[in-house]
Image 1 (tube, one colour):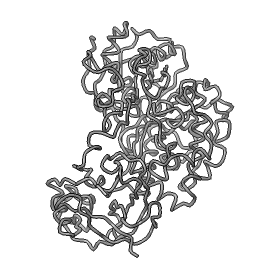
Image 2 (cartoon, chains in turn yellow, blue):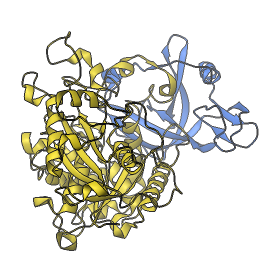
Image 3 (spheres, chains in turn red, brown):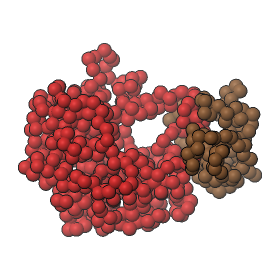
Image 4 (cartoon, chains in turn purple, red):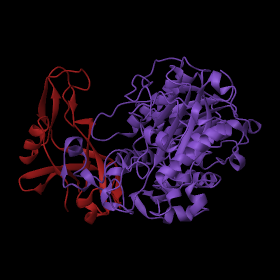
Length: 448
Length: 135
């Protein structure tokens, strides 16, 4: 590997209000994508289904999609973490539940980890990668990092690779979560709770939401979850397409086992083994590629709002979402009514109403999500909400939001192609942005 | 019911020492009226580093709750299902606490109901604060 830069890349985040329009509109485009099949986990035998093999598959698909040769890639942004470790982090630290042969072997790379070096070493032809930072974040901000690196001239054709890995057993149930002690910030929640972070944030605030605005959690959320499953089944590569079950009904939903009641198993995205890849390019390089360039109008990172005490309250959640939406709209120059495709993050279903209302997509304001979700939110209808199916529709790949947005703007979404604007939407907002995260990217098929 | 044991640090030691004496204290800013919990090095409102402590009465109301059927903390798995509620402190509603509401049946949490402070020993000599619905 002769990469010139493999250190930490900083300064790329657009993480506060007031930054104005992204000054690089019209200079960076997404030009390709690839996605491996989505499996529950590696079977421990099939070498063409390992995490690494799926990574290579996705990368080649993205290159083929754009009509780009490996030698043309000069930037590589590979997230080294899958979030599937003992308490998060890398699945490589989730040793006790290995389903396959025991160490020693020469590397975790290809089995539970990916990075630029491994891909370059195992995919001959990546001879001109000159920018491959080591500190690549998860896909929400990874999108922004990659777009900004191209915009800033660090590379002209940049490959983004993001995967999720899932070993036998239950990740995030080890490490500190298996300890009888609560240290650091955990001393303020762990003695009473079930876990920290998103579980607490979402489950409690959505109950507050239902109490304030009326209606049950099931009446609010089930239509959105069922719609996501339906949309997810229209991807050829999604978990439920490949492995079932399909046809989620309201009865299936309400009778499913509770996890953090009122949240049931269908409210939580299914851990999977899969890898996605995306190709970014400068305007100059994009113009000669196979696909229509999809221009990056803006990207954001960081978080909105603040949390004052132990637990984020509904007011704080709503304020944070509104602030994030303001950042996204400010940087893109769009307003809510300009956004055709809306693919927010849904790893827990309860993020959806708050995010929808924060962005006021299709005019939905505080407390109005239940009525909206119980209307026509299908891809065929006038309000095609989360047409990609999100994580709940395809499994925890965190890629469906981006892939669908790309396909919709290209007019290549097949059965999922929305019918608004005669099937030719022009703009999309997509994200892996849990809770108060501002990790959004905005795309357009019209040259800015 | 087994619960995780809080391990005090330099900032939190006065708080846990008070809890072990069955007193609930929150941080009080010396330069503005702010009360805050959990403790932080500075005031959330004015940025002052002059943070003291104030004992509070221990009355609150339930803001919201959920029920843990399948949580991540190993030591609590035998207790599942159990309630997790959020309690707003009456003296400063911007302060909230987690609670398990012992005595309240699973899913039967009365949102908005008044609660009072109780203490529970989770390890020899280490108490934690919890809340109980006022009958």
